Length: 234
Image 1 (cartoon, rainbow, N blue to C red):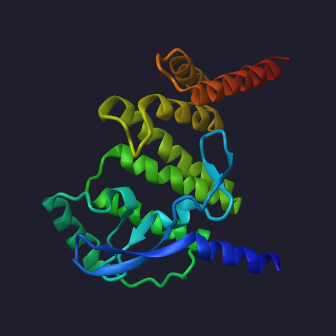
Image 2: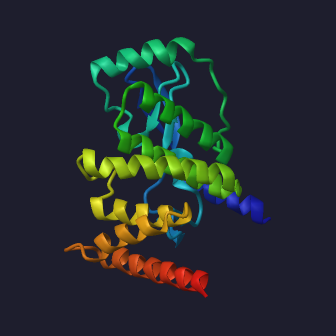
């Protein structure tokens, strides 16, 4: 009964939205989450947010079924003419149709995000965008309990976001500079980069106008790091 009610809740939370591919100009439908149907139930320390009905990451990477162009919803239409040419010759020319389930699985979401990452690299997208996609892939691997792959993509996200701080303009997909520094502190800590994590946290905590939510999380992480350092010294 529980699985049946979960499926009903999932169906009620989604609807089909039509997108127009900026590469091949064909229309296709993809599932989208209805506003107000999904409630936050918890947030991991690196801001990976978990929801009551459906994980938005499952439906936030689009792949055109006709030509293979892939991107996150927010950047799906943001292409320059030269980028379109690169995608046509390097992605579309070699694309073989990949069937997906009506209701996206975590494995399928990872595949779609990897397609989006490949497309982003092909179009010479900004390092920050590539890093943001890599972080989302890491989160999806976390859902699968695949720690090795999670850490691999967290490492990639860490390097890219760190570079983006000094080379790109913010916000990045809705994340301001301080929030990105907080994420860097957390994932840096996960990667064992304790001193770098402390440096990011110091900047975050002393930043003017920081949101109370991020400041509280930064202070919690700072306490955790100092606790771990004290434990290792004893």
